[in-house]
Image (tube, rainbow, N blue to C red; front, top):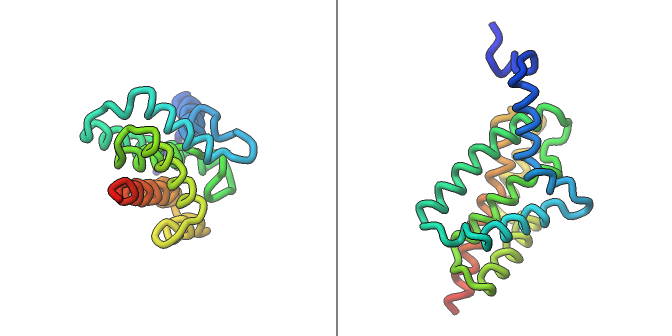
Length: 173
């Protein structure tokens, strides 16, 4: 017996979900930017944060990050079915939620937001410690799509948390 997920492509909903998942995973196509898709995804996060998300309560920010991470994970899981790449550069929903995580840790000043952006990008690119481990784990050939999607989102959430905490320490000096 096949599951609804295995029958998905035979239904009208399957094609629609494939297109929606593509849009979510690439943040509306931002991830198709040549050369620096991750940075563009992080910039989208900063712009949306400054456009009003910074005024949300801590609980609302946490809910936004959690909800977007869950929806993004589902979209990435669907996206991975159509590509041989384990972590396609065009998938930038992970940068969006990672950057939001860093921004949620700092006050909404220009210095704090700019510093959180730079630190997040640095930590996301360098991939040290746990971020490196999660990233390497996500590229294993035997990894299931749900676990791969969780790792793709998870390494950026951890990099965002590290960047936010580093910024808090720097701002307190």
